[in-house]
Image (cartoon, rainbow, N blue to C red; front, side, top):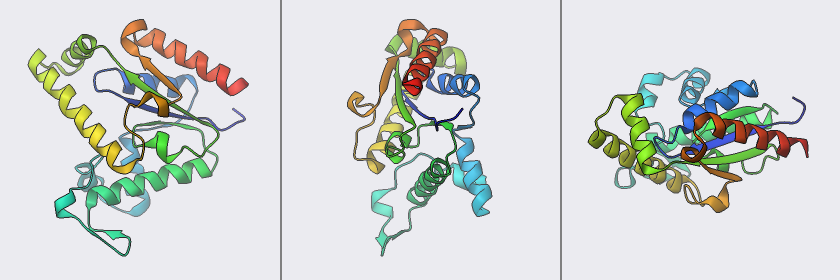
Length: 198
């Protein structure tokens, strides 16, 4: 692939967004950065990844943290900034990749090769998917969707000027429930090919 391609995919919990991102990475033969991004950061910095994981994709605790001369004592904020720097470094090096979440549509907005996508889903379809994939009861699935989406929204809105899920700030927003996961992936693949060939 000649031109740089960065696929930033954010998603509602239960929409199948992570699966879609992984399949797009396979189809375009690109590395994917999701939970493994923290592994990469830990390896680069010589940190213990298990200790970092509990702070991943969380907003800083406002009442327990403070910044002095640009340095924060918030582990959540420091880990977020390390991940943002990692993504910028990869993009600046010219690498093409897929990234799931991590405010990437905002962090990487200045790169011409960026295609930002937000995946939503119908409530019932998301509940069924979480029930099936996680083995949860309906009540547990509903609670998981509400909890994860709140965490993602809080994290994103803490670090970004744009609001999580606001369609005006993504290039493409899709409801994966309408076509199903495979046809949604087909549609996005076609869109990306058309978009990058123009």
